Length: 166
Image (cartoon, rainbow, N blue to C red; front, side):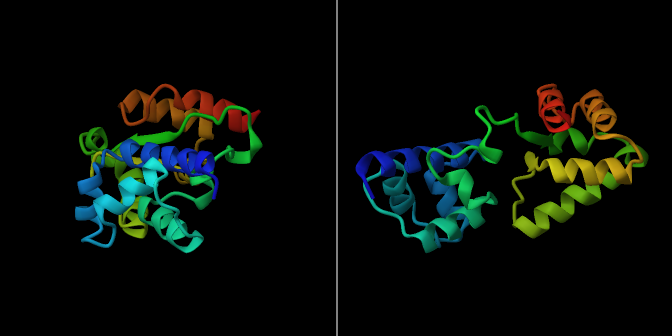
């Protein structure tokens, strides 16, 4: 692995970790010692080569597809990836159950599947939004507006939905 490639890979690893609000020691704690802070840090600096197997395991730990970690790739080959769909779980907890019940259950299922219990935010895919739109009997764009009005989804999500519907 070239040192430039290793540095780009490391930058992607660091970006994912920091998006999730984790420090290097936080990764070690959350993984119950499976991922040592010093090892993850050396991957992020490009000082240490990461095997395909370890990269796949790390992607699984972070709950992202492996291709998200690879340098020079963008989802769907787009020049600029659409904004991420990130649910604010803290705000979701304050939305009345009769409105947010299906979304809360769906989010809890995703968290369980990913083993991701940070409790603050949860990234969802376009497919998840389409599924939720069916559950709520609304179009993805109408549901997006509803979630934005609840404060659960950032207004940038409009661009992600517009990008998907284009």
